[in-house]
Length: 210
Image (cartoon, rainbow, N blue to C red; front, top):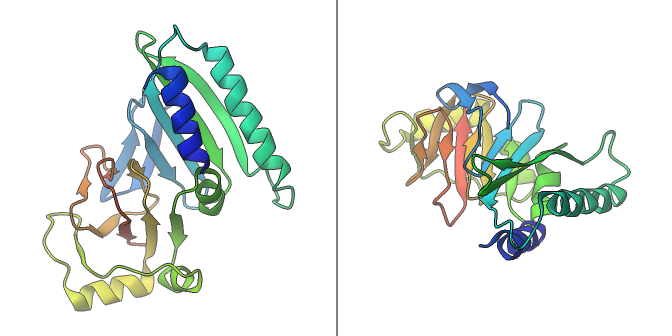
């Protein structure tokens, strides 16, 4: 329950970025210069960049103290995953945003599996065959990403044969490595090309054209 623990830690101690261009999510998805919402970037090779954004109350905590905590947790996680070809988790930045009332923690994970384990959340990236092999059920009650209309069953089946999936229960803006064809009902496409799952309280399925 690492993300829950980190969120609790952040809530307790906090009361309560970079430009990245990706070809995906129905258009060229652009991460803003300053990320002010919790977001996930899934790259083609399976790496995941996590942007955790929260309020920052300087009366209760210091930025240096938060950075030390985050890096210590990363060291512990990597020490338990020495069999990976590269570090499972890298802390990129810990910084205050705007006037300093918000903080952003950027972490890079070597895979969706590492992200899922560290944060105690669901995050799968891959083909339908791989999803089923890992015990991830594939939702077929999807809608067209472009207009929100129900997916045609035959077209959806063909897309599932060739496409890649992201399946997650993370409440975040999700930036995809390929153009998005279908998404879970109730999830919408963001203006920047992301999939807005920030208000979702369940499992979200994203089907991309590869």
